[in-house]
Length: 199
Figure 1 (cartoon, one colour):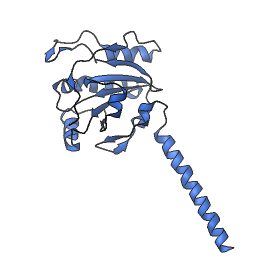
Figure 2: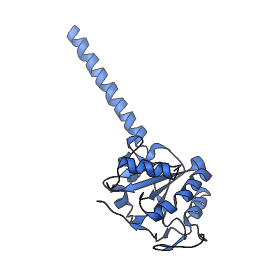
Figure 3: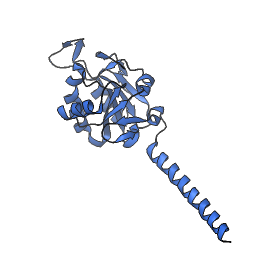
Figure 4: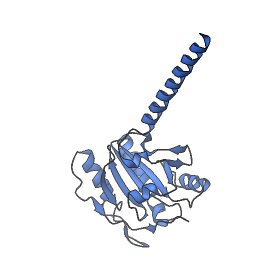
C-alpha cells in the first residue's frame, strides 16, 4: 500500500512538473511568428526570446558596436523608444559571434541605450529577415508580421556620407501609420551601412 501511494505521488509530481514546464514555455513563446521562437542571448539577462514584452509594434534593428553608422543612430533610436513608450519596443540585434559581452555592455553604457540588446550568435534572425547591413530595421506588428524594413531614414546618403539632417523618416512614418491601423505606404527602402560580419 505504501509503495502504491509513493507511486501515485511520483506520478502527480511528474504531471505538475510537466504542466509547469508547458506553462513556462507558453509564457516565454507567446507569439506565432518564427522570429519569436528563436533563442537569443542578452549580455544582461542571459538566454531569452524576443517576446519578453508585448507591445503593439517591435522594431528590430541590426546593429554593430564598431559600425560608425550604427553609432550615429543610437540617439535617434533612444528618442524613438522614449517617444512611443510601451506601444513600440526597439530591440537591438547584434548578428554573429564577433562581440564579447563586455564590448556590448560598454556600447550600451557609452550611448546610454534605452532599449535592450540581443546577440543573434548563429545569425538565425538575421538570415530569416535577410538582413544585409547595420543599421537595418525590421518593424513587426503584434503578430510578428513584417510591415516595414530597411533604412531608418535618409540621413545616410551613402557610405560615409550624411545629410545635415534627414528629410524622409521611413521608420517613424511606418510606426505612425501602423498605430493608426493604416497600411504602411512605403514598406521597404534599401538600408545603407556596414556589411554584416561573423568572424
